[in-house]
Image (cartoon, rainbow, N blue to C red; front, side):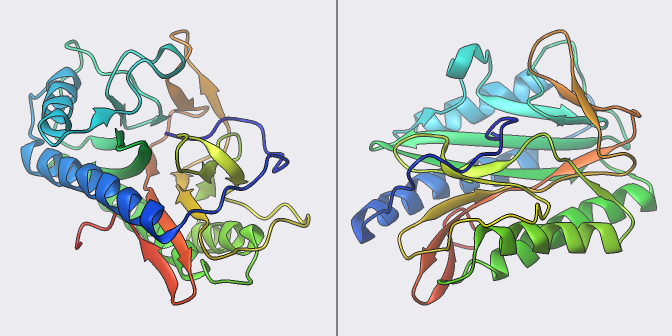
Length: 262
């Protein structure tokens, strides 16, 4: 789940111990397992409410609690966003997946006092080549950002990596919503924009944990929030994609806590 619209970086950054990071790894592996399960479940005709129920049941059975349900009044366990919906889509029985849809799934858990958070965007059967390219570039921008999670770099290096990857491929980066630190709170400092702002940002230190989450639009970067107070859509109704990993800063380089391969 994105950290909100304000980009200020003034809150204190909390450094995690090795044992904290191990628990966060375990939390994020529950998230990763949930997303893998949902990827295998997605099919034409399934509702976003069905996916929400499957995710909640999956994490409950593993001793975790859905992080988003009830957060600032959010009604679901998943944020499920389809096509022009960027983030924070609310699960509903009324919305069934159709062939050619993009579905972006954002999920978090609370486990042993720490949060995990990750997101993936997937194609529902025969998506167009343009849509598949959007998904691939968004995923690539996250990979490029993670490469910058090196001790001594700045948050702005992470931001710039996303922006450069996205814009050289002809897409646009959402500017109103940002990534965030994560730990014993779902949203901690620092806030992580997906574009370079030309200002001094914090240096990366061992023990920082970042939820990096590019949100990339096929058309304009501009977005708006629907009447439900949650669902964010592109201003021009063109498709959007969203990928996210929780990443720890270590002396040995980035540690992707929510990696599907762990």
